[in-house]
Image 1 (tube, helix red, strand yellow):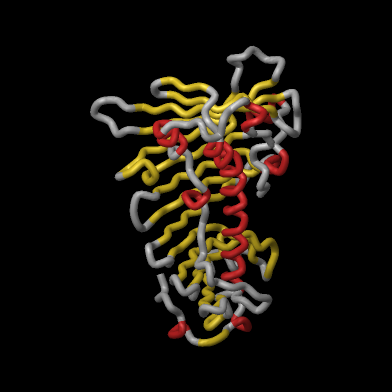
Image 2 (cartoon, rainbow, N blue to C red):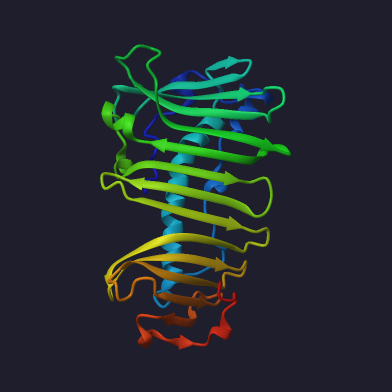
Length: 304
């Protein structure tokens, strides 16, 4: 996934803002949009990968890298919003921009954050990242990303939802760069206590294939992720429904089920367990007994 989700020149010099000229209330609005660590999937920092790492461990790491690319792409704009003062201030609304789009100067973009504080309901913020052609009317903004955040305990932590849709941008000719392969992306996240959770729904373009990812993280660095990993045609297996779990040390276990492929292997199961060095301590494949290695008693997690 591209790390350039937002091809926008956001600079205090361009928009005429003083980056230091923002209030404590502005910060409340800024904190409503997620930071990278809120929507990124994390493996233990000491977890290593080598050519002889366990197969399903490598699959897990690749999936995490791809998802973190999406997090980087989204936050690439957010970081600029945190660094500059709003261009418009209203009692329950802040606006950043409009900013010129570098890849196509015929477009402008802006960020809008609203605070909703109604009696009997939790305080929440809604936000949108919008674009329009320079030639369009000043109020003809279209949404590229929308989201909401409900703080819990403090302004920094809570529950949030981010949604990206490329349909309007494609129709308008807005430059999507590396996102041409994404039709729809939704991220639900919770940061107000452990376990912290992230749920990602993704639809590709133009095939419109759907995928989901569910991640949890505990305070001690242990965690899990559930995803479907494509393995087209490998021993008749086309996709593996995978649940990976790991300790804070990096040692872990992945259990898979063949979710697509030859009927002879469909729904068969497999397991990889690995140590803190990422190397397999136990390997099992229902469809390939030649792959057997080690004993299941070496696994740091029991079978699910």
